[in-house]
Length: 335
Image 1 (cartoon, rainbow, N blue to C red):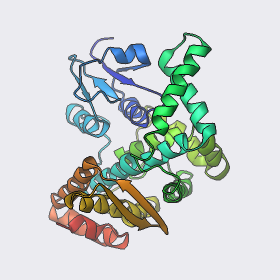
Image 2 (image 1 turned 180 degrees about the horizontal axis):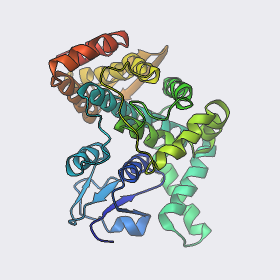
Image 3 (image 1 turned 180 degrees about the vertical axis):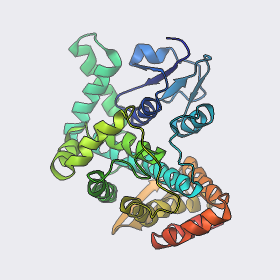
Image 4 (image 1 turned 120 degrees about the horizontal axis):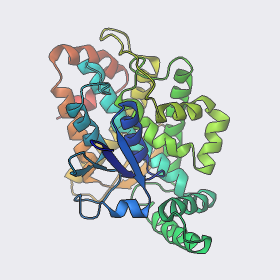
């Protein structure tokens, strides 16, 4: 196949699944390459060897799912996933950012906090990576990977002490989606935006790992099935909502979670970084949370504020009542 993209990723990588779903919906010719042998082809091709890595038709390589999505938007006009209305585009980006930076804690926590999930998923991930070599070798590699991931839990904030907030926020997102997806699959019309793909990437892993999969099957069965739809929407055409249409209730519900949880998280992190602190603490949804500071998430906050400030004045004014109701306006306006 000529003139195609190649995604180097993994079934157990939420960002890989997110990017693959985007290329499928957009009907961009691509090859899905995963496993140790496939990933070896990317050695030295990107600065930080983090999947997914996208090889372009011209043989160049890049990674980081959100910049890749925007680059694809610039390169291919058809079937874009950024709404043309600036206000809707901002909201879609905000929800996607929340998925990438907060919901990933749910994926990581559910996967590596409980032994049943640790064992099953480390073995599956080793199986995916090795594609053979015998059960003994595969399970030995799985145990090494398991120990490494469990050892990183504190770094990313996925501790037993923090998990009540992670789980409460995850259930709030799932409940909002469960109420929505039986009405329509998408958030900003009858076609998907980057918001759906950002949510899908993280939740796709909850639909596979033992403990959260059982939770989804029991409490959020239509979200579990919705994941399979978002995974391949290449057969969907659809339209965007009119710019003056009121947002779907699920959008306001998600913004309420973002205002109550995600912005306090981002602000606490940025404040601690500015003060030279190594850790930060905040409380949301009735739960305390403590984590080490991250420079990248301070950049996320600055980027969200810059995007909001750059909106056309009428789009920004139109969003202000919704953002104020959901607790998102003041954090976006802060200097």
